[in-house]
Every structure is written in structure tokens, then in C-alpha cells.
Length: 364
Image (tube, rainbow, N blue to C red; front, side, top):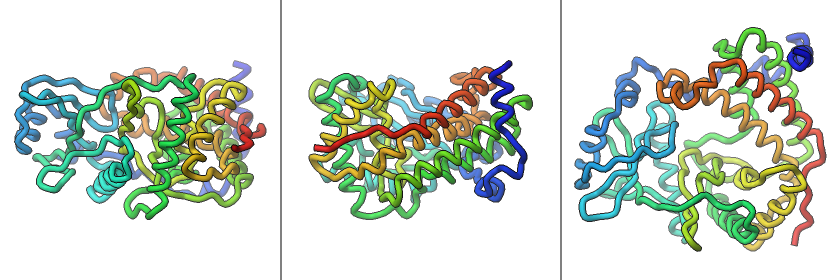
């Protein structure tokens, strides 16, 4: 109770809320209309729909299906007669436009052309995005592997090299249909959505509003310390779960969330533990990175800011998808007060971390 009281006391007068929050209109761009035929069909996607879609592309499926770990889209490993299995990805309606999806595919193929180990969509009839009834889908080669061992310094250097090479391609041109990871899209819009839709337990609303206001202020302060940083095309969701290690080979998967952003966004999610533990991890990543591309050390000021934005965005993402039965099954704790207690505590901890000096790196 003492902790809750302390959190609630940070809410302050509504007029203390930064103007960037008060004036920002709701940005509910990822909502799906459950009355839309495509959304209803997606909610009832069945094996026969998957088979029909793949048979239209002349795949001879052998009936083996394995649902893969994906909630934003529906992703399945599908057995093929007398051939290696494939991965079929069915896109959630209302999230990305066709142009945005095709931009993802084009970027993946640019990276493949640059000899990067990206798992890119397969072409059929010259196309990578296909339609079957109400479903939009893509087909990928199946690649196996395990998550990377983040205690392996050599592997971290290799990942740093790969990220740098992705960024070399990423800075050659810009996206036209993809958003930017910034305080508006990941922070303010997440705050607005949760507050306007009354998804936070009433007794915690004031605490959430107060701590979120402080978090957004500290994120702005981090950006002020970093100064003017370069935005480029990045993976944007690059974490250990999107890296497959098989022997000496690495495959990078899931470019579904590619956006414009700062370079450090593709690196910080490979840091774990306290700052003492993170320092050698960061050194290994950046030693590899600098073999191919210069890293702007001012971006180290943004690590905890980007982590804070991801925490806020994740809560709003769950809320936006709460009408999907799959989310209620996978994240039942989201509806409980304990989740929001812990979420508010995590944001409060981020305030302290953003006020500390950032990680240091002296370079090569």
C-alpha cells in the first residue's frame, strides 16, 4: 500500500501533464474492426483455409501443421510432399497496408542481395504477397536453429557485424509506407490509448498517468542529451528470439515490424543484466559493428529511453489486441491488477535508469 500511495502521489494536477500528451489526439491506427469480414475470417482461420491458399500456389501439402510462436500474425510450418517444409505467414487485417508489407519484402530482398542471412519471402509468379479469399499471406523457406547464447562474446561480435551491414543497406534509401519508432508512436499514442479506453484499473489510473508523464519527460531528456541522431531503415524488433543459430550459421527472421529508427534500437535488446554485466556485451556488439559502420556513441544515451518506449508500447499492444481470443488465452494475466502494479513499477524503475549516466564505450 505504501508503494501504491507513493506512485499515486506523482500524478499531480492535470495541468502539469506535458502539452505533448494533452494536445496529442488518439492514434489508434492498429485497431481491427471485428465487424470487418477480413477480421472475422482471420479470427476463424482454419487448416483448410491454409491448405487452399497454399494449393493455389501449387504447393502439395502433406497435412503436417505446426503453429509457430507468433501472435501479431498467424504463422505455420507446413509439411510439403517430397520436399522441405515451408512457413506460411497470414497477415493480421488492418495492421499494415499492402504497400507497407511489400516494403518489408523489398527490404528483406535488398538485404539478401547484400549477402546477409535474412529469411526473405519466396516469390511465386514474381509476387511475394498473395491473397486467398479474405487472407493476405506470404511463404518463407523454413530455417531451424536455437536462440543465441548472449554470453558468447564471439557471437555478439558477429551479431554486431550483421547489424552494421543491415544498417549500411538501410541508409541507402528511405521507407515510404513505414512509420518511425519515436516518442509519439511508441510512447504518447500508447499512453493515450490506455487512458482513453479505460483499460487500467480505476484505482491505478492516477499512478499510471503520473509515472507515464515522468517517463515521457525523461525520454525527451535522453534525446536532448543525445542531440541530433540519424534515422534509417532498421529491423526495429531485433532481439534474440529473431535470431536462429545453427552450428556456425545464423539466420535473421521476422522483419514484420521494420521501421525508421536510430541504430541503437537494433542493438540494445541484446544487453541483459545490470550495467556491469551489460558493459562487456555492449563492447563486443560495438566492436563487431565498427568493423563495417561507424557507431555514434551519443546514441548510448537512448538505450533506456528506447527500453521505456518498448515497455509502454507493449502494454498498449496487448490492449489493442485484447479482443482477439488468442491473446486472452496467451496473456490471461493482462486483465489482472497485478500486471498493472508491476507495469507501473517497471516504468518507475525506468525513470531512475534514464536519470543515471549511460553505458560507456571507448571505441576501438
